[in-house]
Length: 305
Figure 1 (cartoon, rainbow, N blue to C red):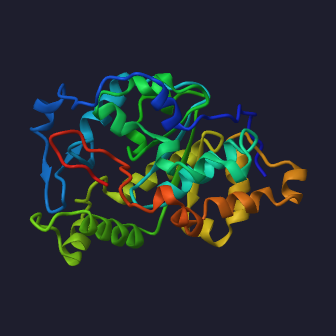
Figure 2: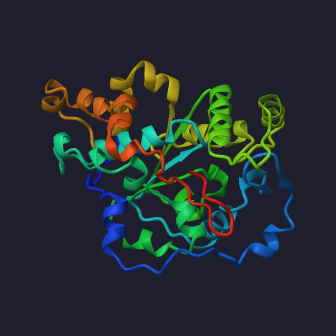
């Protein structure tokens, strides 16, 4: 098993910090609008998307991604969760947060029992796009931050910094497509025309898909993992389903919070897996309404729930 440097294991739930601070109300970042309006436009989904630096990105989040590229400064102990949408992002957030906070909270009174995983791990694209980047500065170290940005878009402070780390989760492209298509259909109003599944499939294969092409998105982090395994961990959704114990132990080792022999004997790994399981998360009151906003598209665009 690879050996990773030790890490402070005490991230705070993002929502707890957010509610303690007085921040200006969200607004749309307009500095990049003129430039974005010149980029190739993709349609057919509930929200428009633009092609920028080789990838198609939701128009409402592109200002945030561009602001991250220009202004974000990573801390040496930051942990970034990077993923193509519908590839296991929520599950990865829950598992990583539970692993890194297991010494701060008992699993019987864990924040994940009362907070959605998206409330525990901040989504960078959304915060920058709504001019709320200051919330990230308020968050104490170590921070867990999530993004759908491809690896090549990450600022130098993330890609080059020797301290911060990246976990990338991938999923079978077919399943990611089907999941995203159903997600888009369910969250759309009847007035908005959507791609048929066949149209979505054809566009997906051609790379014209929000956050795509998926193969470039995946390969960028895969190649970086091969080049710098101490910096990037590449995990597969299907393998995590098949062998959750081994994969959770790998996650813990990578983030610098390995399980002790005593914890393993006490089945701490299995308890964390049960806490973060789909069945358990679905049964919790905080996750039942379906109204939790993961990526709040900046006004005037409607929210992507």
